[in-house]
Image (cartoon, each protein chain N blue to C red):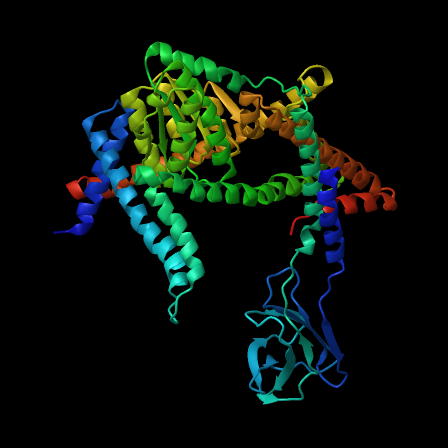
Length: 392
Length: 214
């Protein structure tokens, strides 16, 4: 109930914003080549822009050129652009919000300026909400509600099932193998920074892997490509070792920064692989062209490899060269799977509801669009669904 | 000294040193690796200072037109907290900066991910099956819609992959694997073209410096 009360004002606020409209000034001029000129505040921006549109007469003598002019604060008309003598539009940028700007178009015949068009004026302003993204706001709110609901269910002790994910059940085996062989565990968190959602997911999994290495007493190496990732990884691993009651086993130096350069990092990590010969390698996060270089080297040293990324172009390489691969969203589900925390499981269930919602939208949309080819009214459903999922 | 020839020789020797890794780890590879890592790390330090720190922070803190914008001291302090990690007693301050980075990253990604990975895909999949007109378009459109829906079923985590759900998920993962196979082949072709480029450099630029013309 409290969550509904929280969301309700948001929806009302959204509805009010639908009513937002910008002032439009339009004039008709029957004597001029320019038939109409309109100016309006550019929509869905941070202000400072005015959209100007003009239409020309089709039965008048076409001028050699036209100049779009703006009435500036000095009290004179200043040219802002030379435009083609045809229907067109232009955005006047870098204006001051709240101040009125007037525009006119002057046609030129044989280099001589003729009667200018009527003027059009508008006031630039900023919009708080991008109206083209209202559909996304509503969908995001619905998904959030589903997630909140299932988190609440999880917290109340409801049993939330999660299916088996092969790559994740192998985590314990991989760390155990490294311990038995007396070799380190190598964790590669991708090459992107901490503002990347996959790196954030990777850090959550790292904390679980670190708990296992702390429990089994095997060493953990985390070479990073970004300094901030190194700092976060150090904090994450330290916290895990503390939780497992093994702060003495934590070595800050084993979580180090190599370089920001993609292939420099790949070369450095390859060097670590061939010299330290890790028994288990985790590659979880965002990877690009270095993915196969890392995975192949890891395979050559005989390590058990568990990889995961949401980069579609790199998943094939991991599938080819690694023992287990987390495909796309499995990477984001990993933290819930490994921890079995009710909050995370609830969140995962909420995301499944979102997927079901999208499936229903797709099936309904495709059916109505297909039927609509024979029976016109059905296309309205497809058009509506396309509108709410459109992203501007 | 002919600097061009020196550059060609450096490029060729470093390429051969890196390729020697295909045999096994050796001193030549180690040298090239350390040179590469060291130079790139140094390059990125300067790059970050010149292209990130100065234009995005310093130029805003102390604008060219004069005066000082104190609001920009806040990110400055947050950056300073990160450096203070080297001082054990003050290292905890860096958690403020880190939490801000992680929180901002997660928040911003949420809308971007929903936009690109969900809504844009859903929007693109809402098509009339007969769109295009021909029988091939019908087949293509059915594969697209079936692939997306079955692929989504595969990523259902709160339902066991048994029965009808399991069979649908199997169709989904099969379509995904076919797509991955195509992507694999395409990318390998691109990698081979890189190898061809480097081989051409060795054969047609490096060898001629020794009087060997192919």
